[in-house]
Image (tube, rainbow, N blue to C red; front, side, top):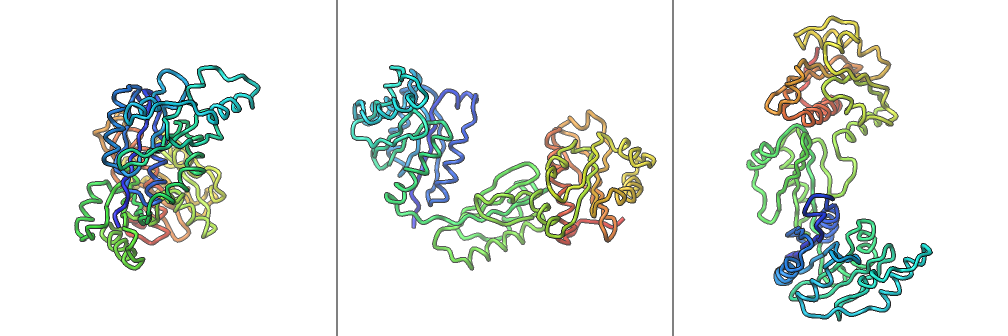
Length: 411
């Protein structure tokens, strides 16, 4: 069954100029996709009446649903209701119930409503008022062309509450919704192009939509299945995709699942084994310890900017031979009072750290109950990218150790 097409439209100069981040659209997209809509577009328009009118008319002819946020305030730059009136014809009329709600909002705080706020009670004739129990701006909804339009305030807390209370139940009544099934393959240490290349080796059914979400060292592969796909078919395709990617896949789940990042997966492994961890950081600059902070399995960390200093901290001679330095540090790691101790060894000049074109070779050393293990990786990018990558790869060494994946070498 073909899914209804939805668009999300955000209004306000502060969005198009980058003064604020449009988190509303991302949140609404997740909710609509989970309900069974095909979200085709996100559009942001500044405080320009003509542009708003043109966009509304375009959407009316191509979408089944449009959710709009912003532009419902009392000031001169809040143009949504006026734009709807010009786009589709119905004049603005004072909604007495809406006015009473706005007045009561101010009364709760012991204030008289400024006259300017009467504007928020001017709604297009024939529209359906959406009561805002959490702020001053009522929303409204109407149908134009083939499209059901829903207009809500841009304040995220108000918008989310109104969506849950009024919009979601109404969408279930108005649309025949068959939610698609999203399977997410979480990967680490492999870029989008490499992921695509490996997935090209398998034939996906044409009705299965393949997508990617780039997140630096951790990237997601998304497989969106139609509602009528059987569980057996979904599991088979997901397994073939995971096998094609290989051991870079560290978790498989669905949309909206929390704690499917590499740090959380490793944390669950440590907790399940009742094991503890100590870390010695160089290149990641404390980011690894920050991800571990507060966990019952975390026993502490030392953060030293350079590997020569790390060697001296553990009482061994610095060495340009990274493997040799790792071998010297490993016994000291065992003495830190944790079941597992992890260290990073990397020699680099400061300018190399900040140079986006320069790469750095990093040795990861894990002292575990059954021996000492090492993995060597080369990382690149700017400072933030290098630090986030080395943090993720530190956790990945532990993941590979616990799950007996290839890539580790005994010291």
